[in-house]
Image (cartoon, rainbow, N blue to C red; front, top):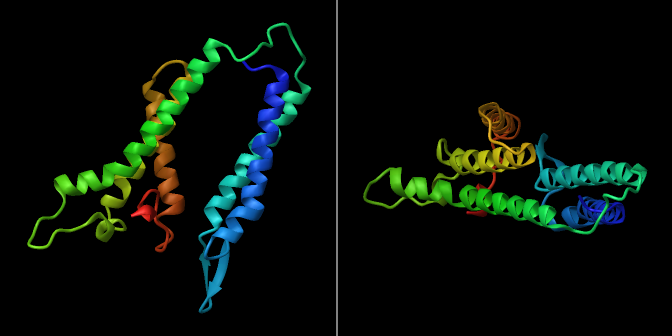
Length: 190
């Protein structure tokens, strides 16, 4: 565990970065605002999801800041130790593995199992069609959610695997099914 002062600084940095991202960076770097009206129809713009994520980070950082501020200083508070370093190493490894799988699972699956014909079909052409648009999101999201929750619990459990799958399905139902114009990550990168 990090000492109290380090926790406060980490929370402050995350709070400022989250607010800066949500208020300045995302609105000025996106083509469309969070919600916009086009031909009398309301659409979710490019800025919506990054702004919601940045505000979520800011809220979590604020809660962490308040909890760290109230925490009593104890003798157990020490510098960055081996256990903390190992935890962060595993955490970053899980995140990197999840992002690599999320990015490449769809194109690799299409190359291996996709439709064949005279013209080669690219992933860019198929990125908004089922099942190709879900493969990377589901596999990478499962690795991310299951890996991090297993790391925090200290063991892998089948109940955690089921809840991870349920979390991914809920995200698909919320963000993909109601909207025709939204591409799940990483499909917008292709």
